[in-house]
Image (cartoon, rainbow, N blue to C red; front, side, top):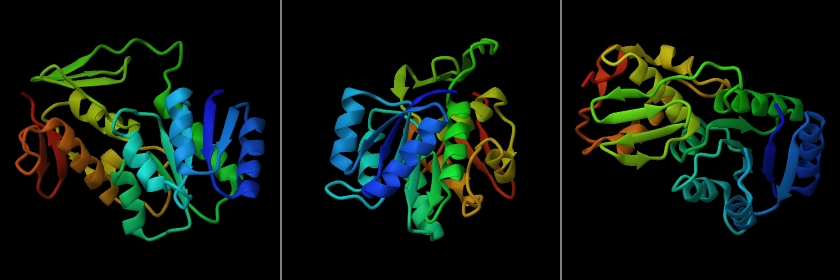
Amino acid sequence: MNANVLVAEDDPKQAELLRRYLEHEGHRVSVVHDGRAALDEIRHRPPDLLVLDVMMPRVDGLDVCRILRRDSDVPVLMVTARSTEDDLLLGLDLGADDYLTKPYSPRELAARVRTLLRRTRSAPARPVAPPLRVGDLLLDPVRHEVTVAGRPVVCTPGEFALLSAFAAEPGRAFSRDQLLRRLHGLDSYVTARTVDVHVMNLRRKIETDPRRPARLLTVYGIGYKLADG
């Protein structure tokens, strides 16, 4: 599965190593060394996937992710030397789809890229999935589009995967473990709290009042469900 991959990494040696590994996988790779250059590159030549280092000059990776998620759902694999759970959850909260902590093997990173691309790109022979409608929420799996009462909602691939699961079975209560299995490629640092972060982000986007959700509901002692209308 060849793709256009943008690597934003301020360490030239590490960036070149990643370039070689990803090109060996068959991808076309562009490299930038600071956050502002990453945003400029994405605006002019949107990649299929962004490998984003957190600690970069000018604009750091967290701010790049925050700015990017205002109008783009390009998959983001964030890499960082920070390894606490709060740091990992912050990256996911800002819209990263996967998180890899340093030191890491370039071979593992290449595998994560493959996993994210499989999750976010439709295979040509895949059956056409019909749009899913739950009340005034409409989810189109083919176009990767979500609208609420006709208003477009930009979702990250991870958020879209969870919302798809909810919308396919409205009214069903999913446990956090069941929902985590919908999110491929997450590393061993990530816990079930990852689901809570994605749900919190979805509520900000689809609820009239995220503090009093009427669509995406908590099922105490179990997990979450999408109200069936």
